Image (cartoon, rainbow, N blue to C red):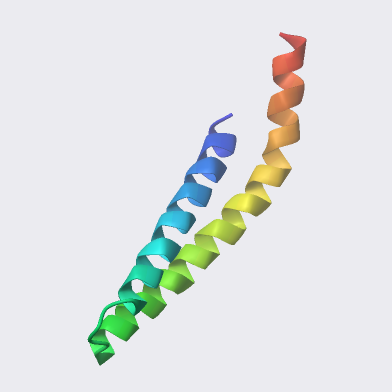
Length: 70
């Protein structure tokens, strides 16, 4: 059950970090630091999102099967 919740947390964190990266690109002054931080946020966010979806697909059927029997 905990791995299922961790997967949902990773999806939420990946979405948040990707959104923060997109906000960084909307600033009027794009310096090297802003672009670097935005790329780091985007990479980490996409990784969390992809791994969260992957783990969610793996653990969700087990959780739903356990809740039907109880």
